[in-house]
Image (cartoon, rainbow, N blue to C red; front, side, top):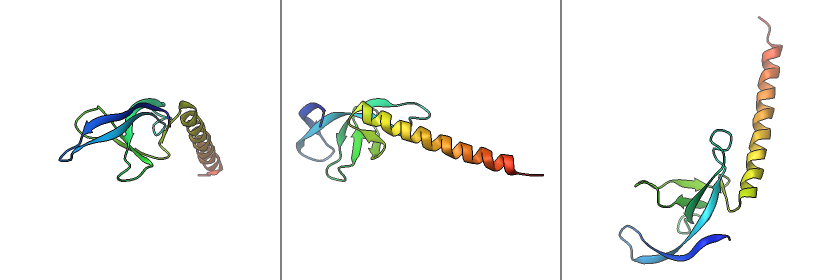
Length: 103
């Protein structure tokens, strides 16, 4: 796992200090509208290892679930390419239906 900082101490609400791992995560959820972007995040091991929480941004936590985040930029790009192909196929299907319509 490509982590940026191992064993960072983080104070959680109402809990003792505990070690958490801050890592870089590439977000592909908004690839077709906002593009792919990189965040610092921690894996939510206490909830689900496929879920991350963005760190250091605002007072409300932002969570992402697989397959909306990846540990490498290339994995995120591959997912975005798959999303793009699916969107193109969907739009082509819509255009075909519209061309078949008769009024």
